[in-house]
Image (cartoon, rainbow over all chains, first blue to last red; front, side):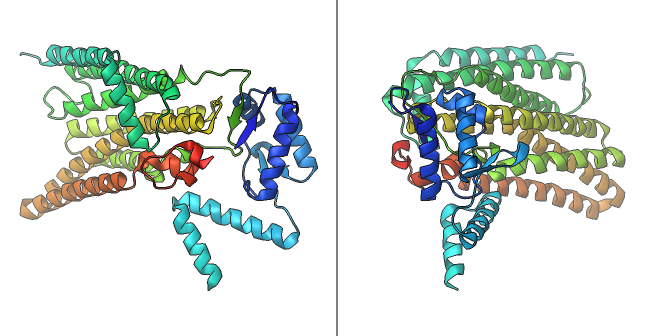
Length: 117
Length: 303
């Protein structure tokens, strides 16, 4: 969840950027997660589209997100090469689980069992 | 010959006016919001109640207007003998189908106007990830509508080729065509609804906006789902009649009864599975997973 306080001394652009960075670092935003479009996020948060676009550009420059043409912006895998591969595999699993309509609990139970095996 | 159409039009108009009047009755409005809150599994804070109630009432009005207009149009079509012929026993399918399409369209149009009011000086919250239609509509309903419409279209073509029961085939083909149109409308409108901004100040407001969106999308997908199922069922009856005629005798009747039985069993099984999977809470599982299976919860718990 993102929040913007218009009365804060921190500029909205910086509030947004810091929250994205924190959520990517903490894993709350997993590798491969698709971000809202610039216009949609700007409308949701009551910001100018340029503010959100600038935030996305800086996040991309710092390696937190990547833009895949017209498909949109996605969270980049973080860490070393092994960790990045693991995150990409986790995203593929999560996407497959979603497409199958399987519950989170079942998905976690199965992947936990598979890791134990 | 006496026609029941004027009487039925009077019934539709009366039902429409009653639905409009009910949305103005405070006790009905409160009950409507309470029932919706229970069905989606979210507790409604008092501060949000007027806005949510107004949006629900707006949707009922839209559904009533759309349903009444299309039902009357369908009645007039039936009166004119289109598309079933005046001697058909299946006119009710056209009327109910028309009411379904009208209700879905009316609901969609009514929901396009209205939304949460924004305030520039308060804290805003937003989801950090993009959402799409499958986040709001359960796979069973989404895939079910697409499969039902596709099967209905194929079934209508096969039934036309088999050239049995012309009146029934015309109805099945008409319903299949209407189902295809309704599905195309859903595919276009649903994306537009999901793309609309959600200017909210708290996670609770966001969860409630999600709940209303999910409910709206499910209302709209009901049209292609129901029309596809109708067309499939009627196409099945037409095909079974053609098969029975070609086989002849008792074996033909057995085949006909078996096909109709299978269709009915499949419909009942799907309804049971749909009810058991509580599709009205699909959005909670997808977008607010931390709320979990608890029957009543607030979004602040999950934020």
